[in-house]
Length: 132
Image: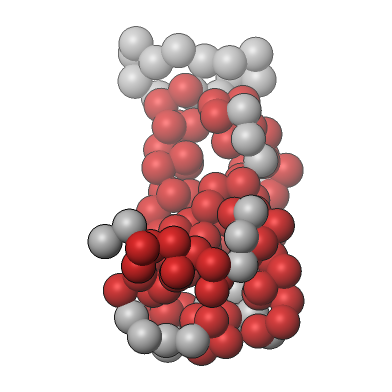
């Protein structure tokens, strides 16, 4: 720990928290890109992500929630939707193909997508074509 680091009530360095948060975002970014590229075939669970970052899942949740006000899954979901939106805009892949690339069952993906974006993948694609 550097001499000027601020520590929380448990004695953890805030610079260590920033590093953990940064590594979390980097990991989910790479993981979702690897799913789309076919380099990975299954969505990582939060406990697997925590293990990869060498922390407990409870610590990961606490640090990210404290810093952002959101559970880590919030950002994981946002990254998945961001990648799906990109593929809907930039490719001719069907919603089912996009779902499979992101390791989702196509029927569950449509429900997931609509729950978090307010529209189906097809509606998003039509909207993005209309705005061009």
